[in-house]
Length: 405
Image (tube, rainbow, N blue to C red; front, side):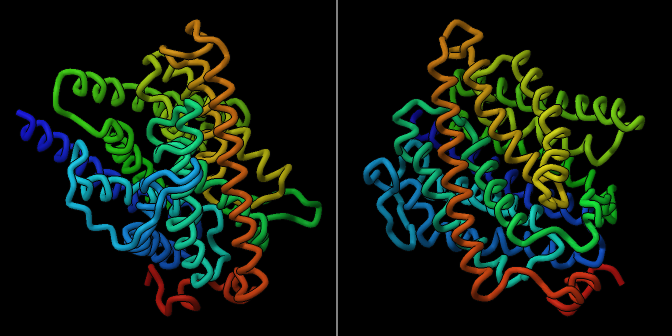
């Protein structure tokens, strides 16, 4: 019976890993649909390399930095070329595959925030840095037995560990690279730069929504037995409800603010709900998931305006609001809505405080390392393409081909 249970658990984890891998084309479609057609090949290339280089780098050393034997609560004991044949609940190689697709997701989030003006060569460097160093270390704090896990921090599938890390690095990158040409007028007010194909963007969001059913339920890391069956089913429901609530909320807010229900913001509202519920999908009720999705939809709409109008940071696809602000908000809300320890369920404020500490610590780490990385690249090889390349498009100049002919 033990062998059957291990087989079932392994099969579920690998199916979930494949579903999360399918989120990569989802991200590629969202980013290319929300940006201009002259940069589509560049965006597709970045997303392809995020997964390809990320897979190699995470196998090379990133996985053991994240999950190796704990060293001082800060980092795992690193080793090269992971090749363990041990079975710890499931085969270690199944765990490697599942965690690899998560690492690639963190790297891909940066792409949207710095789209349409970044050198491809510079992008490859910080994609490697995220996968090898930035993401694995803060991930170790939470999932590898580090100091935040000892504190009791709860991030079931990665609202903070995966999504916020990528977003905070992206925020620093977008700020240091500067806005796209024509984004801000002489009066400092932002101008809309419409995307090339909202149909592609919408398809990408549906693919991501589907992939999230591997991202969150897959993080149960087991499927055999009645308890796992109940847990996975519960996580499917909370994940779906939060996404739906985020989309509906974003739609109504744009309808009230701008007199029309905007598609692009509504699509991002669904993603915001998905990101927000990822931390607590296992411990909140279906009703709590709906409330978290509603709050995420609100944060998404006003977060985009804050970043664009107040911070003056040009984020072409809203990645920082979707993954950063919504991820942080959803993680903190676990301290309110956890049915086991949440403040609203009689658990006191302890978990709420721990969640807040974790969110701030990971944000400081990601932004601090992101600043160092982008600063070094900016002072050495440079991180922004020339004015001519940006105006005419990165596809031809950076890659010698166009996505549309």
